[in-house]
Length: 325
Image (tube, rainbow, N blue to C red):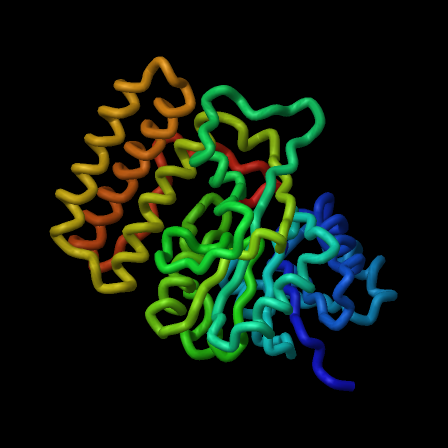
């Protein structure tokens, strides 16, 4: 039989309660010519059983990856896939029925398209609403992503499609060497920017990156994350992740100190300036706190040669079945 046209990879770690919904949303796609690969990243729950219950559909495959790490799992899935297009969906996300058709059409229409991703809406659990201190910017830490309702070509890595709704041409994936495991997250290590760094490499290689508004996915919001301590912790690790990215791209050095210091002071000033607006004030406080993580990692990088991750002072316990976005 010919290879499928798209390989969809779901990386999962102890999310059995949500994984079934993500798989079902794939198996109900309007576009039928795909394979779905679930990469079980060292789970200790019912993950394997959840997949097995649905393997009456021959398109669904199961892989076990014992080395914990999101980018490790992403690369394992890609190595074991067959299609010219590789798409990633989170284990706690729900794809709309036409998701794969939109992605496939976009790559077919543009042979210079290297990466594409779509809009992401938040799916709030029953009885939970967005708190008044949650800004649109901070909502992006929960997975929200919306660049409008029109096709948009991205020219800055900071606007990258999110990893939970992310597709890449296989030849481009191989050209840039896959996802960098140095930007991996495991356990309480909330390193991120793996998708941002991938997009940066793709753009530097001369490929195009597109935002596809109709490739819509919904992302579950865990109630445990709707706390200020979670966002502060996430901001801290975002600062460390940015430092790591600069280390990988050769931008690290003494210049990080005044750069991070200026951002810290700017964020702190704005958090006080906008005290009457809880969302804007807290957004800037998280930004400032993230710069402390950035500066801490920068100093360690200059002293030790690598910005070794360190937990945030407000490092909150991570729910057992709730890995970071």
